[in-house]
Amino acid sequence: MAGRSSNRAAVPEAKSALDRFKYEVASELGVPLKDGYNGDLTSRQNGSVGGYMVKKMIEAQEKQMAGK
Image (cartoon, rainbow, N blue to C red; front, top):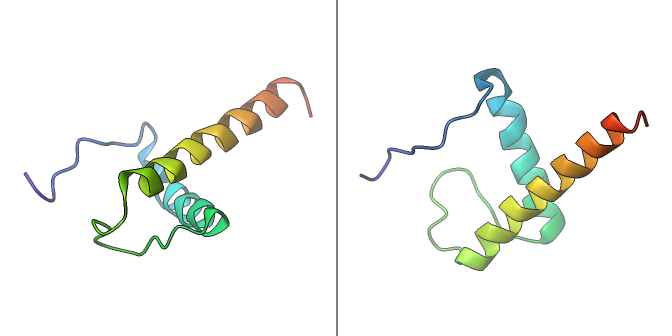
């Protein structure tokens, strides 16, 4: 099952922007994320990147909803 991900973007056109965002967040958190295989990273490291991405996206949406 390697190489087959069930993760699909709801808006496929946003994939490259989401990838850039992922690397930006990883850099901010000091997680050594690289293009390709990242199996040497811990679950905690990978989870922190995903969790922080969600946090920042929610903050951005809340600001938009509040008209800021």
